[in-house]
Length: 247
Length: 247
DNA sequence: GCGTCGGATTGATCCAAGTCAACCGTGAAA
DNA sequence: TTTCACGGTTGACTTGGATCAATCCGACGC
Image (cartoon, rainbow over all chains, first blue to last red; front, side, top):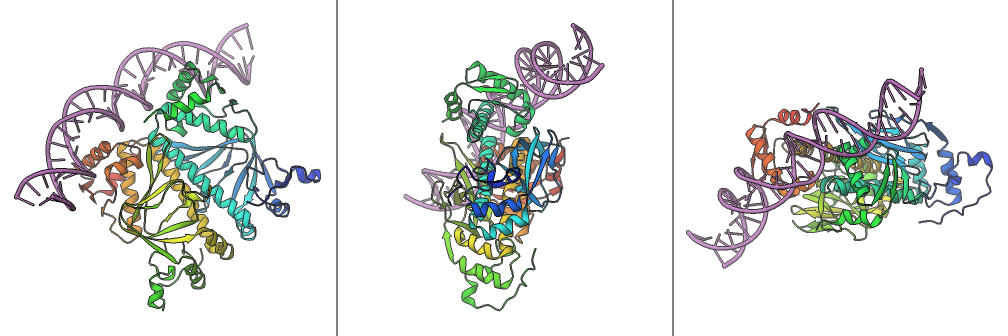
């Protein structure tokens, strides 16, 4: 990839408030790998910020698609709804991750995106992203990587749902969260869950009681300490071992 | 989308053998929506054809990625392997569909692609696809749609694995195959399965015995006629009803 | 301080799918 | 023609997680 930007730039305060070029998530988010001049062009495009309150929808399934969204702060879930009323959480997204890629193919969103805490997002008009990425090679390539990563992530979830037992799924889930928090500079061992047991269960293809029981077992085994939504991981290797124990 | 190409073009026989512009899959595949001049530029890029014999790998997990592949004829499966030996089929692909999108994000393939019958594929060098799509807007946009469609498809599979019972999964699988065969001009009601019960089970998160029993039940109920890999769908609505029967 | 409410935990029971095992059908090799 | 191997079917039994239900806990309003 192209070179990255040094951390301290001489930029005015008004810009700081909205620019990708000064966002501390730029190494995780869409701007990854862009040089200063390219970053400034991206800044023009990502002009709209929006606050989404906990519980509110960023978008709903069926709404017309015209932008993708980068999470600046906060935490989201996406879910899909079947005609017969069943639904499933398809993912949890945190700062620096993109939402809305599912809408490109039909020009309508195919899932709901709901804030699990008060959040802030950047709107990226999709047609403008496409035209800018026709001009900036590294932006184009990085965007393709992000979409591809989403596909690979989904394959991982399919694997989890198709072949793992309840405790393995929850262990995988906790390790994945831990790893993503770490990448954002938070503790890898201690965090608050933003979602309920039911939402975790929906994502993992389990009932909330099963999730709760698995948490309790992990605590008994000394792998973690749980108190409601507060999680401390005490034995990462224990959790990892749990996932590979099957021949 | 942009206008599509009339069916009969005056092109030489040598071109017919390899060109996207004369491929009868162009309405399903990457060339969708391109005009004649754009098609010819795509032809330059997609110059390499390869035959893959039944059972052979098109690529393996871990191999460096440098091209995506369009299936010209035949049938593939993709699967992922976990360290502990468990594996899962992540998809079945047929003519006109793309393989290899998973490799973009890490520049290495993350799954195996294996031919389930003698097949023919077109290699599309990825860096050249990116540069051409910087020039041809409709190619760029269509490629983004294809990637997005893959994400949406994966969400559907997650839904299936997370919320459906065995018979619902198999019904969804059969209806999906039927619909894709139809889109390719084959009978929607009668087809040969290219994969074993075990492969179907792996994809659907079920054991082969469960798949076999579900086929037998569908036959008893008069929804389908099965004889080994030969399937006839007798009652599409019966299968559809089976999927929505849960409140 | 007290009641309420939503989320979480825990227990008892049930059932769909997994497991194990026998057997069948078909097609290729001998 | 027989044999063999592999995939598919079917039956008997087991089991992991779902279901149903009671209770707990913490946050919040009054």
